[in-house]
Image (tube, rainbow over all chains, first blue to last red; front, side):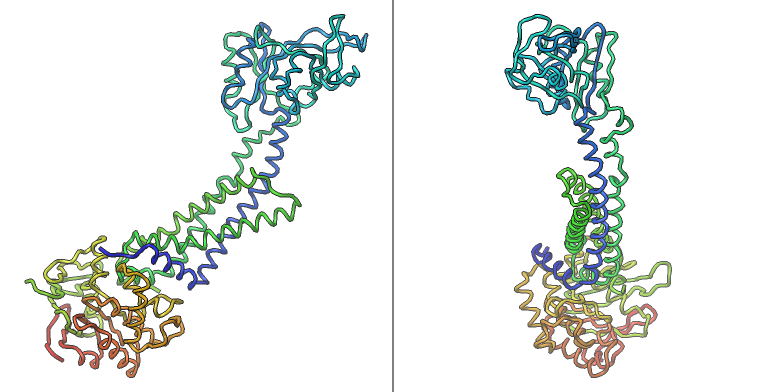
Length: 360
Length: 224
């Protein structure tokens, strides 16, 4: 049973596209407009949301704090860091305020923290430095008042002086400790608080996860660490709930409908292909190539235009995450159109060829 | 009854719930034969051609080639349509904005002939119908008579066993009609049978036999 060679079929489709310039340009133009608009809206919206999300994450928006008057197992707290979707965890045990040899008469907060606290309390801190574990960890405000810096020595309450292992700025992620003098403690015994930071994409069940780890502590309380001025916003939820996230369905159907319209005026030509023995599956391939060329090229042109206009309007370049979100939305719309559009080709093969040939 | 060539046996057809257009029609066409289907408008000439060429499924009856019943649906029907039949329609069915060669090669390509070979054979067929030097022209640049000759070239290039022509001169003036009919006979392979639905006595005179359709029935009237 002989039928079209695939290469010849594709060549025929390409020649039909080149020959039917009006319909090809119409379809490509509609696709460029629809996909371009979608990309522009996505890039514009996600710019604000992603910028906010970065700030939200940097401010500790994905952190949770477990606390208990009975104390929490430090080992379990630090083990949380190895869980999926957890960036880091650290235990903290506050102690009484103290005076230092450098600034007698001035009280500073003190406490012991597990090593993970450096990463949680300050994004700039390097927790891998061995010197940190052996020396003091000083909040930046405390270091400023003490007139000390990394590498200098001092003691508290008359004890032996120790070297300053690191000075960290905790103003954003834990302002309380910015005026603290801290020492590293091993992950053993109990701590009064356990801080846990999750990855930004995870939103559901975070509090419950932390609570479950310390379920044997009757009075455990787990609260999110959210800056008060950002209390009402959840960037992950806003990203997921943005209206255009589902607009790819409308976009795809709109382009698909235009493809059907373009195909509808070619019923007699499709009938001619059928009359010479072209079967429905071959017609589907022919239609896919004929519609695919203007749809893909239109989507590409529209997307590039949208990004160019946004870039010109904001004097900035979209970041990778913005482009990825826009590409996912626009790509979904395009794929839907490429699935729906060519279906009319084989569908026309359901009726009488003789009748189809009379259509104009 | 079996035999070589194309046969329609006991073919009846009605559109929807309308009256019978064809009523128990029997007709046979031998290889290499030219048969004119004549009759008034609405007598079922086009319908009978469509059924014999597998474009329309009859309400009842069968179509056979060399005694074998042809399939009425599916991929085997597509293949049979491609292998056995070529068409020349009254209204010029053509791929607009494509060249004459592209159009003439269409039937060959649908049969799996490689494009280079199909193009060569299409150009030969275009020459045979008198379109020398017009093969690279876009069909949108051709006259009505030239377009119909492109359709004839498309039908003949594939050297099918049966060419079905539905009023091929119906929309042409007398002089152009003669050119088109000459083209059909000149380009035809000796074994290719022609079945032509026509009102034109000039066309019928060129045929070996005339079958007259009236009231849904067929009457073989022998040579014209």
